[in-house]
Image (cartoon, rainbow, N blue to C red):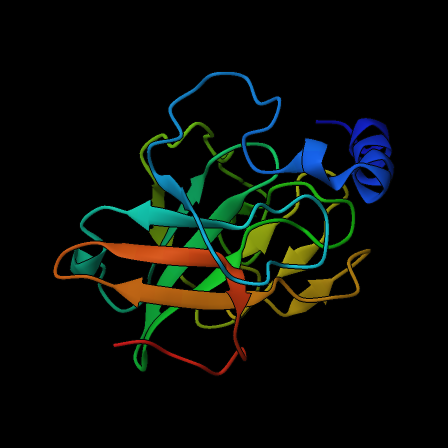
Length: 183
């Protein structure tokens, strides 16, 4: 979705929020990985109040990361480091584009995020340097979501992880402190 269209939608949603509820006017697609959340939501872009399921996430090893998208507005990052699991919204706070996994220190190779609950992309979480890149304007984010290079001024928001026996859910409507880990 281009930036002009997204900004137009943001303005419209400010005056008619019921038209922008998750799933309202969305094209049909497999949204089976997302369920409504009762959390307060993230106050930026059109990030849906959704919980996104990551099947077999308990198999994620320290240093690995998964990226999964529902639609142009809602995507999540699930990662594991030495302290445990953590999650980030995958929507860039600058112009609301979905970030991609980076290909290393140069961050020159990105992998587009599949939508419609396609299989999550898997990558390695770098110890330092860029981990996520916004393909729209080039903002780079570290493994913890911190801004490394603008134009983004805010980090990728940290959100709650709900761990099951084999799966995990990332609750995009429940912001947490960036230091929080789940086990």
